[in-house]
Length: 494
Image 1 (cartoon, rainbow, N blue to C red):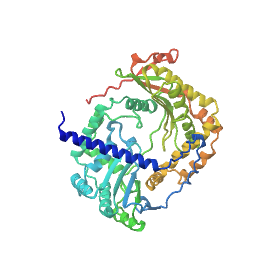
Image 2 (cartoon, helix red, strand yellow):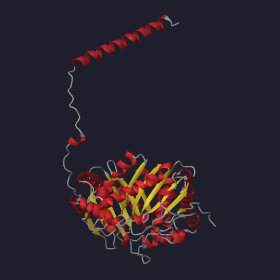
Image 3 (tube, rainbow, N blue to C red):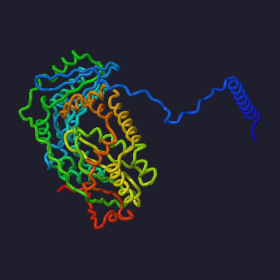
Image 4 (cartoon, one colour):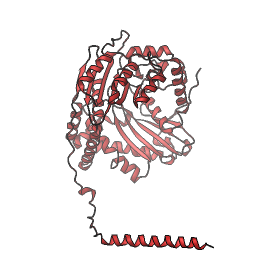
């Protein structure tokens, strides 16, 4: 039983709620109804034309020691960011020391400098809410900094110091190795990563610089002296492109760069090695990685591709849009209509200075593996042999143009692209050529490049999945076809 006091309190709450509701209804009743127009069908929507692509004003110059510099002012926020690119990459590391480039790029920053310990650098940057980072990828090395405008002199000095005077301490090298060892031990945990890694080996070759993997053994072969030697070969001024964007005055920035980097002498140990040659390693076969715990298959199929400077690149990018994305053939036919895929795609993926790949594939349930592969092949053959429709062409061109514009949303993106063109020796107006050519692409152009560059007889197919669950079996894809198993066991160090 409730006490009289509790009953009284409850009654007051009910009465208050009632009065609030009455008040709201009274207010709402005085507001005139707003007539909402029925929504338009998407085909009736009209959009303004895309803006013209304009590159912000920038300054390019070269120091006497060879450093190429790009400066682009942007005073919207009191921030400054910079990036240096160095002509190096893991493709130049020795075969028995895979991982050397990555370790060099990591310890170059984490190992401190001749003047400052790693802890001192970290503390100085934390106090300024700034950052200095370094790294080396497959085809280039990089160093970055970011800071508030007021902290530029101090942070840029640390940035230059990290580039010019890295200490490569033994302690930080061992820590970086341990982190890599952890990555190696986990590399077979993700079936999607397995598919991507092993497909690259099938295309380029297991021991090729564009496909080989870091192993415990190759890590053990790397010493502190190896890092110092690798750095000395590639990190010198005539091998460097520097770009800075943000809230600064160009004249003052030029003076700061010259002060910090102008006296950096070219290295006598510098090298300019030839790029690795590329040929397709495997052709026309099917390869399988057994993963019995899976109830789905991860599939990649394709062949060696080309470079961005291919004169047909623009038409190939339109072909990509016809095949992919919402409204694309693969999504509509294989995922939506047939229900054969969780994800599906097929891209002509070029690189700047060495051949990329044409790769198709996706993920599907185990029992749909064979129908999925057959359907992807059918779509590839269809775009090779039958003209696309004008509607498909227009949708693809619109999609490509709309996504292309987003590459230039801020000055930093534009500056980064200009630096890449300089690094890979592409023409300065490559940005504008692409857009101009894109608008001229025809139905005939798309079919021509599809027929020329998509080569079914060259395609290699890789499946990561559960053999028992794949029914019908992969052998049903062709009479007498041979399925080659790939062993992904992680080698232990000797």
